[in-house]
Image (tube, rainbow, N blue to C red; front, side):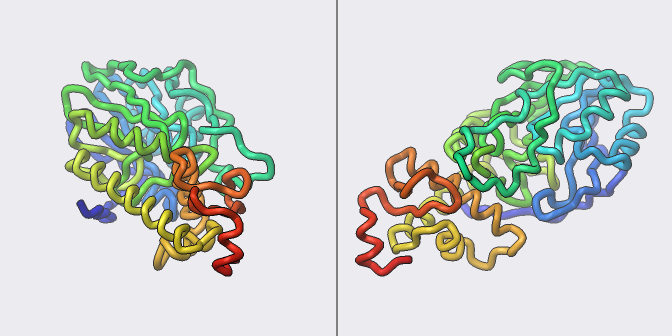
Amino acid sequence: MTLAFNREFDPRHGEAVELMPGVRHVTAANSGPFTFAGTNTFLVGTSELALIDPGPDDPNHFEALRRAIGGARVTHILVSHTHRDHSAGTERLKALTGARVLAAGPHAFARPPHEGEERPIEAAGDTDFTPDATLADGATVEVSGARLQAIATPGHTVNHVALALLEEGVLFSGDHVMGWSTTIVAPPDGAMTAYMASLDRLLARPERRYLPSHGGEISDGPRYVAALKGHRTEREAAILNAIRRGDRTIPEIVSAVYQGLDSRLAPAAALSTLAHLEDLIARRMVTADNLPILSARYRPKEASPDDDLASGSS
């Protein structure tokens, strides 16, 4: 199944856009190569509201949300994960509304950072964020008669959750599934093994309409998730083939696998490659000369370091 992205999306920055009865979004004006047209903050409910992903700590976005809230009572602020473009605006909204803040937990690593490891997107992590209570897997939140259920979907981050609007067939998919692009999985924050397992988890669920935190809706979520899974499997095979052909470093592998890559996305491609390599190492298909980090050298599990000298690889 071919993976087809949809980048046709009008963010209408600063406006509350109705997506269906009882569901609106306001898109923050934080457009960029990793955020697309900006972060979508969702308002779920009518007289009572739950807010999903407050977005960046931006006064203009806060004012747009204040206008959208109007006279409604905000009972819950739900955070899909602790990257600053999603969670940094939480404190302003909590101070305004008094709402209870729920998330899977504070920012954390999927694995401990290795000594001397480069972490190019470390600034994205919101280490200041602490929820009022833990949003456990399977927990539900009721607002204006609607029920939202938390679905643990680690991978992009270890504390990522999607939220299902039960009885409506709608899934707020956060950054786990987006229609405009694949999701960055960047160790040590994220892990490819967990990401792929989380895709399988969504495939087993009934929701079809996905509302991601960046870009527009996905009308057939399960079909798109199946295509995402196939894409990741193909990417893994290409990485493994590059290593078997003699590529040993992540820059060499990225050059071979990511043809025509926007240079601004090279660090993300390197980190996604590292995530795939960690998964391949766990499955005993690849080995590293030391710890699996961006600067390590990699080879097929059956190969030895002497093979590099014999093949003339550098």
